[in-house]
Image (cartoon, rainbow, N blue to C red; front, top):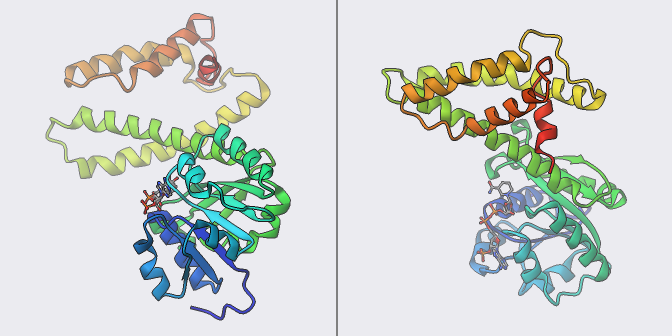
Length: 293
Ligand code: FVH
């Protein structure tokens, strides 16, 4: 642990897998660290590494002006901070929540005299404290607060500020993770197609990951450009009409392989609905608008 003399004190509430990983980076960087966890024994290892364990959440909050919270969900944040004096504190909430919960928590903090910054962690614990792993946290809420604490906030992973709206960090977080689950769904379907065949999944894997990488980047940029311009027509050969014409092949292949089409069919249905309104010359971007309720 480095010299703590000139580093700002940090309080951290929550020593789960993520909280513990975060805590170690502040200790290693020389920030005086006060921790609290509902189950006190989870602080033991950190105390032996230099952290101070507070007796309760209120004592932990009192110890530093910068208070970072990394708990299970929004309800646990409410439970942990219930009745705790937050006057004059800078509260940074790294707990995963919905955008509406983040906005409500920002208002809740303001009513209690605290400044608020919300965070969405784009990393798993082994990426924390490992800059080359590329993890970062989306931050939103007070820009002033973000800039004031940027040095401490940048210790565990990178930082990406996405706006004054306290809900934007959660929105960016959930949007990226939603895309990830869509990708996982496609990967599961692809592996299911080959599952019963004499095909080595390890030989198939680099083909699949290479294809996803080749498709994902250009398609994301193209979709963004089309959403911005409002012109969804494609100048390449794979227009919607051609792609919809190909969907029965995917469905028949799934049937031949004894694989449920339940992961890919909803997307095909949306493609067909978009084609039905005369969008055959478009890219797939029109599906975005069909999702808006
Ligand atoms: N771990 C991960 O891979 C992901 C990566 C992306 C971001 N998430 C989010 O980070 C938040 C914390 O996640 P975690 O991995 O630390 O979660 P756990 O290891 O399950 O620890 C949960 C902590 O929350 C405490 N807690 C739960 N309920 C309450 C409550 N009612 N009152 C006070 N504290 C509560 C729990 O305490 P204990 O069980 O040890 O007593 C842990 O400290 C989370 O939002 C992820 O979505 C992680």
